[in-house]
Image (cartoon, rainbow, N blue to C red; front, side):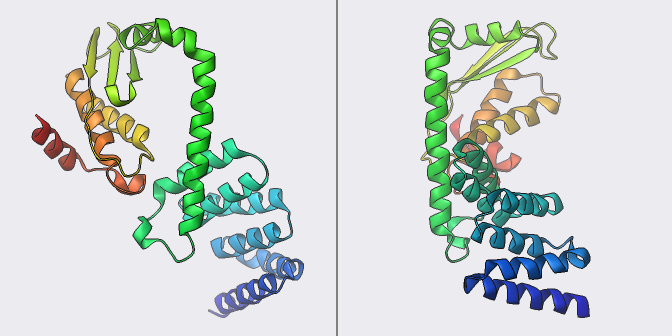
Length: 261
């Protein structure tokens, strides 16, 4: 208990020093506590804050990585890491970290005071990076995609080795092509997707993949039904804020499919 009280006092003093513009002394206080409290998430987070205040961005990233090594689901560490990567002029890496942060972020209505603007910035960075990536792929793969669409593209991907290839088609849904080596045999399954009122598309692709894998790994050989389940999972996931928090349950997906049948 005495050690915990000592750490709490150190953190409070360090935070006061940072607010007062003396981040260097704050950092010295925090680093002195490291031998005893090196597994403290709060200690590493405050070290990152002090390092960032000093402009030592790589050192701040190192401290945030230490936090995430202790607890990978520390939302504030991810959000802070994305922001620092932005300051370092690394938008692609920042967007990747922001995506992970948004997957575990609480709904906007439950966000702590002061985080609305950082969350808005995270979404903006992700959107800009997604558009930049899309533009790159349009330029690099345009000629290929123009001559290979849907099933044809899926069949070409099978030549690279997998027994099943999935091609998502945006609002047009998805198509899955498989070879004779697949558990469900050589076939093609296409589903046109579902029209819904989208609120937040964060993690929609992950939701689709999770739905497809969950259905297929359960031993369901009905590929058409698996693709429909995957599209329904993605459709439900975009109707609420958040990534992980918006993922629907198996029952919710089944009910949605029954309603749309």
